[in-house]
Image (cartoon, rainbow, N blue to C red):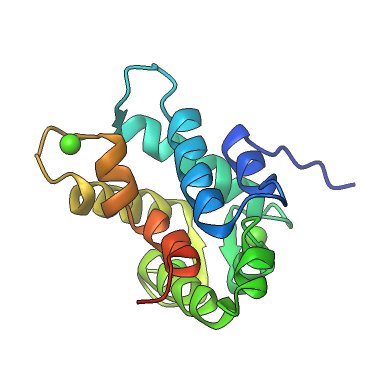
Amino acid sequence: MKSKILSVAALALLTVPTFMNAQEAGRDVIQTTFESADTSKDGKIDVAELTQMAGSIFFGMDYDQDNTVSEEEFFGSDFGLERLATERDEADIFGAAKRILFALRDRNQDGFINQTELERSTQDFMRHADLDGDETLSTKEYEQGYVPSLVFRAALAPRA
Ligand SMILES: [Ca+2]
Ligand SMILES: [Ca+2]
Ligand SMILES: [Ca+2]
């Protein structure tokens, strides 16, 4: 028997209301994940909070519970946004963005993301997004610079 615990963050990703337009939904998903990650409720996400959230999503995707996320597990998880991306003919872009995200996390390119890789890549993403260098992410930094947020935006942003 497979017992699977979905985190608040992962649940938020899976419950995008159908009536929302893609842009609103994208913003809402990013906002909701920010709020669920910010467990201290100070309006900022520190590296511990970010790692915790990434870990919850990771375990949500690890169906066979071997503590790694395979390509199959990763691409089989739809983040709740596949449908929206498909409706908007953005499935290819979303798929490409997910492939980039997987490649960035799978640092030794063996087709699996292990926990060390998850933590290291999350720290890299944090450094990349933390423009003011205060070692926390503001909502703006999280929306505009955190790599997984950029993946959602790739699928949901209006075409230029
Ligand atoms: Ca697995
Ligand atoms: Ca790997
Ligand atoms: Ca910052």
